[in-house]
Every structure is written in structure tokens, then in C-alpha cells.
Amino acid sequence: MVFRFRRRGTLTEAPHLRGRGETDAVRVEFTDLNPDTSTYLGQVAYLQLSVFEMLSDLAARLDDLEVSPRVASAAGVALRKYEALAEEIRRREEDPGMSMAAPREVVREFRTATAGHTLEERALAAYLTAGLLDDLFLGLASSLPADLARRVIAILAADNERDVLRQHLQDRIAAEPGIAAMLALWGRRLVGDTLLLAHRVVPSENGESDERIEPAFTELIAAHTRRMDSLGLTA
Image (cartoon, rainbow, N blue to C red; front, side, top):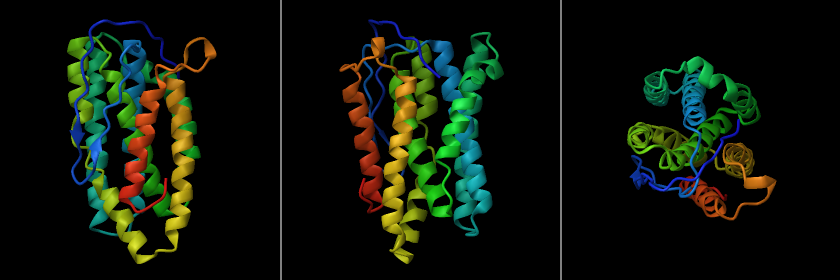
């Protein structure tokens, strides 16, 4: 699951975003990197499909009949984003299934490693990993060809409706404060695993540390910290 990069001169800027009930989404800058378009679309489409599956599974496991339908609705948003991205692949006369074949195994391994055991761990995994990867791919979209970049940014920037996860976790922590320490530890594990995946998506040149991309990863971590802070957890 590795992008090929080339230099670009003209970039489409990713917007500052505000999710409903969330802090501003981070604007991640990968200003002089340009992902291979076919590889990027296959990866981002499969990740949205994976988020749909993750949220659908969580909705089915929740007993709260106020929270579960809202999580299911968020799953529907991810599915619609996947469908829109799959259509972008077809516009390039490419097959979505073939495009998503390459990242499938590594994303499945990632999901297994970050699934969690309790419902709270599963909800936190969905909230944190999907949010961090959204930030990453939204930032990378700004380096796509201009017309495609605008369409992909519009798809990814649409309200994901995942604030229900934050609200649910806040309620669970308030009802059972003892789980906060466990969730804080789990959150630190999640960001580590997610950043490992992100580094595979944005490899450094010549196998060495690339100072050009470190500020962007710093922003990803800062956004993760804000999500943790919104839950009263230590990142």
C-alpha cells in the first residue's frame, strides 16, 4: 500500500473544515508531493468502504436505540462517499474492484489490529482512526489534478456524522469514569498503529526521514490530540 510521488507545480488547497460538534478538521499540507492518481483513488475508496463496514458492525452491536441508528446513519454516509469515489475511478475507465485490490489486505490487517474488544474501544477506534485517515487523505487530495482534487475534496469534506461517537463516548465515560484510563491507553495505541499505516501511504524518499512531510504528520497528531481532548482523555 504505497503511493508513487512526483512533483507538481499547481495545487488545489484543502479547505478548513468544521465537523458538527467537533473542533476544526486539520488542514494537512503535503505541498510538494503528488500521489499516483489511480493508487490514491483505490486506497481512499477502500478506506471509506472499510469505515462503512466498521460503523455498520458497531451499530449492530450497540443496544442503545438512540445511538445505534445514528451510528448506522454515519455508516451510510461512508457508503455514499465510497460510491462517489468509485464513480471517480470509473470516470478514469478503471475498475473499482481492481483499484481497491492492492490496499485490501493491509487495511484488513489494520482493522483487525485496531478493532478493540469492548464497545467503548470499538467506538473509540472508529472515531480516532477514521478521523485521522480522513485528515490524511483530504490533505493528499490537494495534490491531485485540479478538477479531480475539487471533486474528491468535496466528497471527503462532507459531514461524516461521526460526532455521535464522541457524544456516546463522553456519556459512557461520565457514567463509568473508571474506563477513562483504559480508553486513554487504547487511544495512544490507535494513533501509533494509524500513523504506521499513514507512513506506508506517504513513504519517505530513499528510505530516509523526509523533513518535508514531518510537519504534515505533526498536524495529524495535533488533530488526534484535539479529538482525545474532546473526550477528556490524555493523548
